[in-house]
Length: 259
Image (cartoon, rainbow, N blue to C red; front, side, top):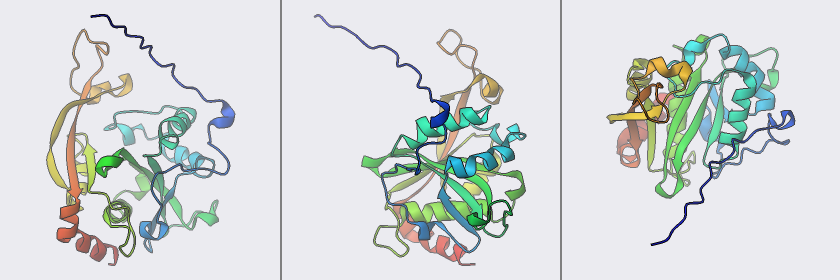
């Protein structure tokens, strides 16, 4: 039996400096409609993260706080690295969407047009369109916005947008499953998800090979494999599914948002 294997590893993509902030006007390139009215309350709104608008403020808030990423499976060490990741890995993939959290209770004098201050970011990721599933991930809440209304309202708005049917009021995109993944040691993240009606499903072992800078946050990796010496990270998995939503979580979310 004759066969060949012509696979060649792809060349890592690079960006020119002129491409780091994406196209103008900025194209979010997302496969589903963005219902802005579904993604806001009187105190918080979730809007597309536009690098030319939000990136400098984002970086100013995180660059001196590496502890924000200690439970993450990746780490961007420079603004350029972060922008490259956003453009190549997120914006160019129509199943992903990066959103900015705007806290409308705190104005930003330097950006009055925002109607509030940037409080963090989040990512719709690991989306499988044919299965109507997605994950709310890469959640970064700035230190001054932690232990406020921001995180809980962000989760509630995401659930409403992702699980409401398109014909509902306010409209959603009608997914069947919304997933939440966290480092098993990240008790605040798991606790937040559980308080917002996510159900713990279990732990996926060795889901991530960690970069060197975060390797100490995982378990010992396997010696002799291609990533020998780099730690592995387990992942706690939680979810809210459509039957949970229609079984009462939707009413709890709406009551929470109307408080």
